[in-house]
Image 1 (cartoon, rainbow, N blue to C red):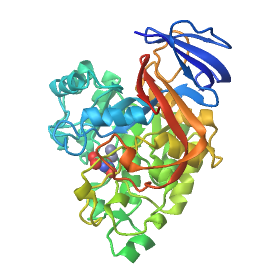
Image 2 (tube, rainbow, N blue to C red; image 1 turned 180 degrees about the vertical axis):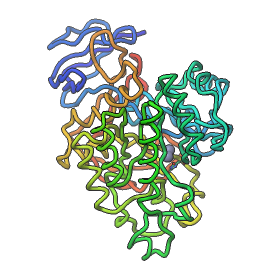
Image 3 (cartoon, protein in one colour; image 1 turned 30 degrees about the vertical axis):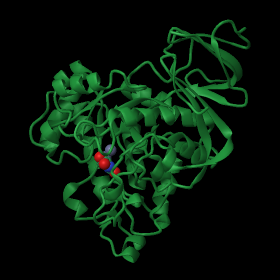
Length: 425
Ligand code: DOR
Ligand code: ZN
Ligand code: ZN
């Protein structure tokens, strides 16, 4: 494998507090040297002057759609999209067809992804077929390579079945990624309940749909002893509950998606599928509370819930369109623009939420640019403004409410295990 010398970039590595301009030598897939100046020899040189260099982002919440829904996304297009977004490791959710609910399915996914440009770390379902009735072979899936368990797309509504799953997860030492939604309370809702839903004449999803399951999951996990990671928290009371769990010393982490800390339901301009995702865009008090929770260390992780769908499916009323928007190709830019330029996080703080903390949730040795570590490295430009253009996405999904949004934080180069997997130039 070739040597790569990154020259004169501003290395921002929150894992050891580094923030300085330096050279970085990558050799044989690993970080070989970090120094003020490293003389170039035969290696390829990447000029990073004026740019930042950060550990590769880790997105704990991605939908790859393969197997079963390849018209929405494939492992190939989804992992290329990740590389484009500076994301070097992804956790694909198991709601494919068939569902990833057995050791064989986990192995099949890993086999399909073996040549992918980024690391693919599978998430196994909690119950067979995600039907909420019979537990999947949790230990078997872990042994086959699943890094977490999730019923994403829904919650396991039977609390007894769920608690048994949580107990097994605790025994195996595998975290549970919880999609929190009380199915009975949804009541046909397609967007946030409130003034905007009334204006558009659409059925609403109240905050309690999420909050009651967040609370349930925290208290069930307290009894089961598992690590609990709460997916796509969208309400102010989710933040209150995560804070409570942390005060009690429970191993609970909270995740927020870029759309939930950036847009409120007030910004929904029309009844169109591009504004539809689950949980929905909430009220402005929720958006504000989420930003503050990220700032205050209550929310730990920013992941995307990258959920590609076909164009025709999304190009219709929220009543009929499926839930989900894409996001993996602009998550760093949205985070940088909204939270760093917006004054809620430092740049190192943002990288913590997008790389260091996700690695911690998984308990993997990533999110750190240091000598001897695997070279998952991203070079980005935070100085110039650019416009989000879905036509430039590698993802098959173009469904985003951020089309045309002006942002800062363009990913220029993505390196995985010492190999350039995306380059803007
Ligand atoms: O918006 C969403 N889309 N939320 C989910 O929970 C599932 C996801 C999907 O699979 O499309
Ligand atoms: Zn979900
Ligand atoms: Zn999801």
